[in-house]
Amino acid sequence: MTDKPREGGYADRVQLVYAKTLDYVAHSVIVVMAAGYFLYLTGMLPLSVPIETIAGNWHLSAANMQAKLNLPCGWGCFTSPAGILHGDIMSYISVIFLSLATLICLVSALLVFFSEKKHLYSVITILQVLVLLVAASGIMSGGR
Figure 1 (tube, rainbow, N blue to C red):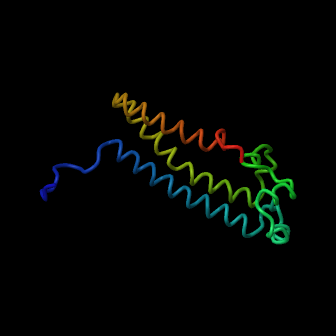
Figure 2: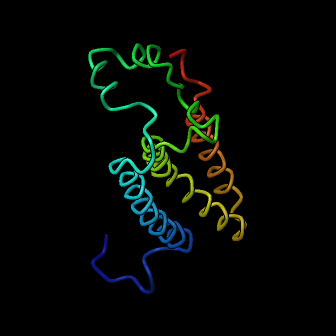
Figure 3: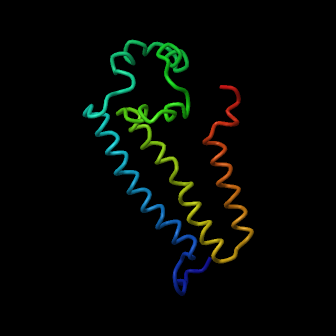
């Protein structure tokens, strides 16, 4: 390593696009999470499970509580549009949006790789996106 300062910038175009996308997504996530938490906290939207019910079944494992209260599993809370309009589900959606930040940034980097005709990096990025999508889908959940 040398102590000489570099000529020009420290980042290439992909890094700059990734960073700019991450900045936008991070600020958007903060707004969405605050809104979801506000809706949950104020009770402006009804809760899918009342707090008293959760407190009364706190001694149960998550799987037993889910079975006892007939709660949807995994992505099941998104099966009906009416199910989404609950304060706790809106808060949950904001957490999902947070977890999608990496995926959104990778897709923006992929677009730059395509435009610069960097085929190997494009393939690697597509594989990363596919792995994240398979992991998020729960296809390979191991029977749990």
